[in-house]
Length: 126
Image 1 (cartoon, rainbow, N blue to C red):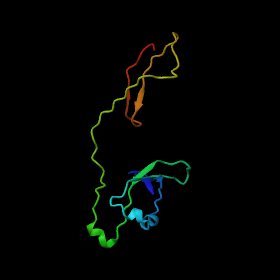
Image 2 (cartoon, one colour):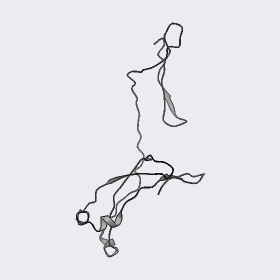
Image 3 (cartoon, rainbow, N blue to C red):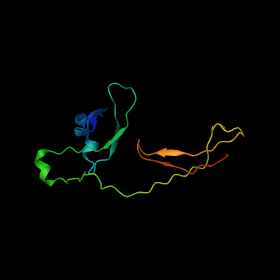
Image 4 (cartoon, rainbow, N blue to C red):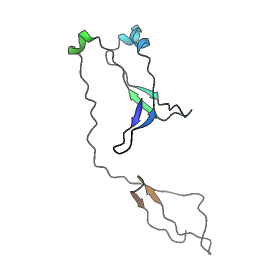
């Protein structure tokens, strides 16, 4: 089960992904692979017939007697990076001409989330 974490309200179910562990454990070709491959599985919600996205994972089945000899993977999230996002708009289509001269004063607004957005310069009489 995969949930969306919420601090105030309850966590929301995004969906679930299924992995057959028994089939893997008894498959000799899977047992022989030292470093298990990263896999992608579709996330399915019970109320939708459309995939809700992908989850990336790997499966490693280790007998309890060998737990002390197994490599521990660090799965902590990476620290956030400082990034600069630049968006170049090279053309537009389907803009209605709203001015009496058959032109429009066009600008484009890009939203990163519901509160943060950036706007281009206004290009008058396009």
